[in-house]
Length: 615
Image (cartoon, one colour):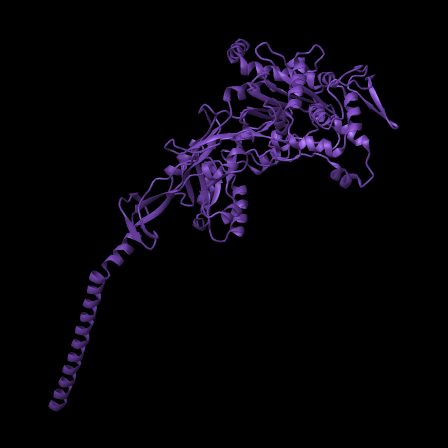
């Protein structure tokens, strides 16, 4: 027994020794590992520890402001609180979601349906916007019940606001939240950003947008936000050495728009459909522009519903359509100046040549082309034909001209091509020539009868109000071409000018200045002459030169047109007016021009009159 105990004791001793060696080895390994972690890898694990208690937040930049020429704010930013729902946090809290919908005034069935479609479309659990602009009550409920409703997120965002409401709406445009397509096309955009969709907001998006800032915040182990972390951070999560930085605001865009004139034009344009464009003939600056009907871009501030969008976009009057640059109309008798230019340039007629008298119409083959004045104008020379807008005289010019001669003169004055204005979706219009008629009707299948309509600005000829204003500009400045523009300059947040639109009028060598002078004198008599069709535009303060037009409309009443510039010497302002279904240009459009010219040349009187009317 004793021998057995000795052997057992020796075995146990050996085992104890082995165990001690194992324990000692483990302690040594542990000590070495701790030394490695605490000494050699200290910085690495310090960064990991920091990563567990800090987060990176992007700070969206405020969008640049849009201002009128005098600095008045036309588009600003306002803070709104957006409510989003986090689909991954709803499971097991359906009863709380139902309670939240009741408290927030959200239709639970509609939210549930929309959420199901959202989850089916986006399986990554991304948040879905529920309310674009929360009211004070909704903000208060979510702020006070964060723990109760963890599946809702309340976030402040900047949205566009238009202090002047519908004023210059088609020029300014509107914004909308970026789509998935936008995100794929641009790496600079983030989900929830807004982007210009139309107007200046769209064209100058890259200047208005600004650059994101960065905020490093510290959070507790429970996920509660402690505050902003101050200092330089370097770790994998934050992609290198970074620190909090403020956002860079977007640039302010200054327009050429004269806000006082714009207000007057908007108030004076009481017609429900049409457009007005006013430019400075010296540099192409757009001083005012109106399109009717109009809309209030503030409806987009909180995100427009599908129903409201369908109503607005489906309106047959097209309030979103910028008629000033997108709509095309027959220029009617305003185009007679171009025809007169073509006739004089080709020597198809002389300035004092008297043609067959007008007795109210013109027989061409088996067709009778009527003049706008049933009793006719009698004997006229070219000046008289322009002043009285006699159709019969111009029908006779059409027989002496070729289609390409019409088109050549029209191209000189900007018809048939885009002006290049800094607004989107500009229409080109139609300026027919021989090739056009051959394509349209077939070679040899069109006649001089088409040119008779051409000669009075009808038929296939189409132009935008902007192109008509550009024609008025070129007649005003002696045939010089200027590019129309709405933006005058762009400034950064420090007030430094980073862009300035400097347009120098381009002299068109092919234009005969002597013919331009003749047309200018004729346009003056249109307004000042005893029989001039534009007498309704005359004012005492300045000599107005103009031309009326009445465009035939197969779908209803004729369109009223008027183009003009003033003063006669050293012109400062040129305009084009189109009023859809308004009737004669001299009766409807010319008096509207008078109001505009009065406001421009005598603004004090206009303001006093407006004040008396309000009282």
